[in-house]
Length: 260
Image 1: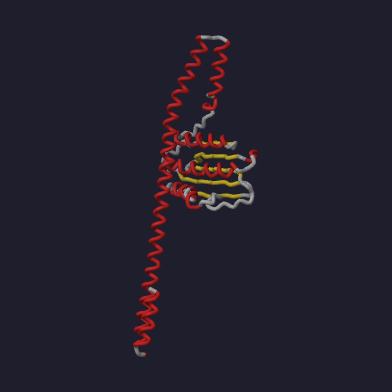
Image 2: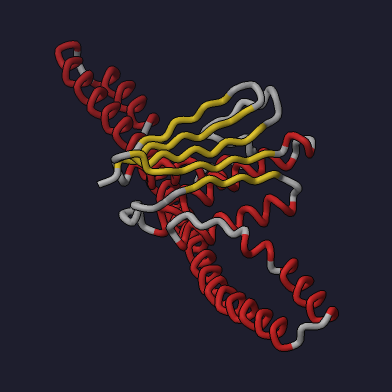
């Protein structure tokens, strides 16, 4: 195309008289405009193709995450049923065979299922599963995990959006925490409905001097960049807002969502 503009210009000056230079200028201008339009079109097509690939990866990631928590919920229902049966069996065993050995066995079994009784009950079963799963992952990495969540009255939020918000935000917090000294590894999750607003705060400690971009320090921007944008989309879907606060050693995600 550049060659065409140059050729037209040179050829025109060699073969056209002075009176025709305006026509030559017009042709040159038209060719330049065509070149610019073609360049912008190609660039836009390339951008749309890349954006389409990103959208497909986002959808696949969210669907995979959602399916994972759905399966975890089914497992949790089975465990819950076994848990209640086991408690009843322990009562029967203690009452029918009131011996020292029986009492010791019952006490041992109770201590083994004590963690289940510490289970977070938020008022939303799907969120319960997510928090339990993330708490277990945090525990594996010696991270203190605190959840004070009351999700009653939030039935308007779809499970997929709950998974997107809490799953991605807590994953980022775990990643930021695992490289800290053990005594500084702390994640705090708070959520409650105050009148007509749902308030969500997820806070974690971080390395001093780390400057987060879109809420993450990960180098792989193409893949991990899905997390924060997806949180924003899920929150904005309900007319809510996200804000990110970074201090020297602390990072906090604040979410406000109006309740219908």
